[in-house]
Image (cartoon, rainbow, N blue to C red; front, side, top):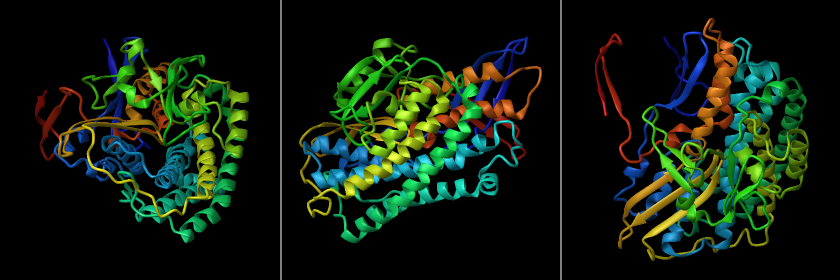
Length: 473
């Protein structure tokens, strides 16, 4: 006989999902799955639309990371127009994407995960939340709010709106940067860097009590993927794909990301609306890889900014050259916040950042285009095919959260096997299963689109909640 534990919904993440844990007759965990229960379908929605609208349309995929979708979409349209973004326009795209990484990472670490880290997985849920953090450690809460606020303000100051800014367009950006806006951002950066450094110092001091558990928390062998520049530095906007194995050995070294389909396959499972990318040379389901802040630090030589590189060196001294535990996504996220703030400062001090030439203009010159960039949660692919008039005929989106799908399921199973026992059910053991998903900071509304004939289940319920009928495809 088997029993099933259902955690529904998974809390403190973006989007809707549940976790099921299967137990055998001895109460031991035999399987577990992370189910994404919402469906979006932007790969179909965008068909029939003019390709120049794709940055604005795909931004609506998500309110947390719309800028990343705009960047990847705009790069795909650049490819279809056979032009490069104006150099200053490309740098301004970099700035706004970095601002989004900063604000999104701050939301994940301070608002969603810090309650577990501050109080512990076993703490009372009534206390284990952002309000509890503000009461227990107001400085940590204030720093988190301030960092996220600045990231959002930079997006607003550049793009006109904090969510879905209409500023990123094919060929570059819509408007040049005003000197006053540049100076306002530069003036705010030092305090944000200080706040990030305080958070890192707190986390490192607090990590001592987590080190034993962190060593096994979603720790397993996978490949890692991320974008790097010519020098092997982290590149959140452009660059080449670098993929390494669990030992740090390159599987692909600086490959053109537009060749992604040669290496990445996409599978569908009937128990989730989230498709499952995999590394083709290893096959499915063995081709498991991870993306996101931990993967980016694993594949890169350095970040390329001084304070973040200093922290990265300490991270590697403490954790190892290739970090395998999902728990360390938190540490990596903080380092990327610091890097993002430093890199924004560097870019805004560039000699041509106030140039008025911020957009290249052209018409449709190709029938196919691919745009790849790094979103907060990992590598993001937008791939479009258009007709002679630039109308989208086909679109494929591989979202960062989708790239991590197999890893999240592996992590859920591992943590469940370690902590869940069928002879008793306690909230802390189930919270640990949820917490390993929070390490990946999944953005589920971003990630569920279409591939072939996806599973569909409909329920007709009466006003009292009873199920009257079901329909399954």
